[in-house]
Image 1 (spheres, rainbow, N blue to C red):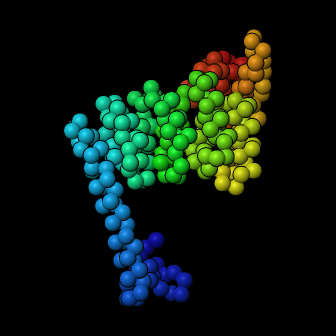
Image 2: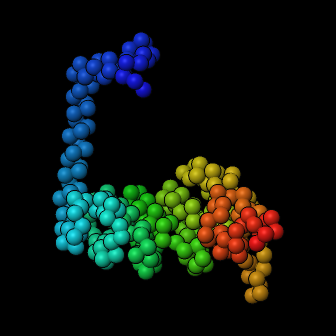
Image 3: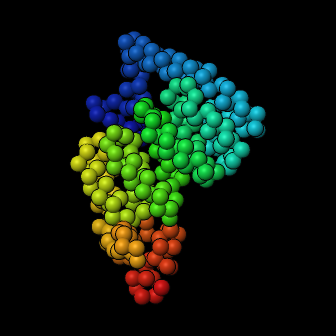
Length: 249
């Protein structure tokens, strides 16, 4: 909005800011909040100094682990991140470490990340671990998907589990759909579950040659979903999902 544009009460944004700046109580409260935030940042920087030092030693010019994403790929940094993942760091630093591990080079650490996610109690780091697991999960790996379905369906993981819901949708499995239906009854995660369910047609079920449920999408569901014509969809459908429906694939 233009600074000179009139708002409610006939004052411009600049006039409103000036009025606030002239209020000693508002200025004091703003300065207090900024000082508290800076103190937290300084604490985080001191705490993560050993990790940052190792990353800099590998050639990454970062002041915080949160900056590492700018330097992808960083395969040689993954072992360092894993070693520090269980360190006695503030929650904000542990969250940054976890998020930095959501890269393909960390795929071999899948089991370790799952174990840490199960143990983690603080929301920030747990969110970071959920983001990493969601990024690393191979929807073609039934074992990994089953693990995510189990984690996402466990209410003890709180709202962090909604960060795993994208894997459920991409998997196309009926048990994943059922987890989302159940999650839609949980106020902590209902909003995201309902958004996915609205765009996800109910998957069809089937029996494979071994007699166990195959649990995957119908071709029509694949086309209608937000997954569209992504590579993993084509791999499962044997070509373009849309062309399969049209009889061209």
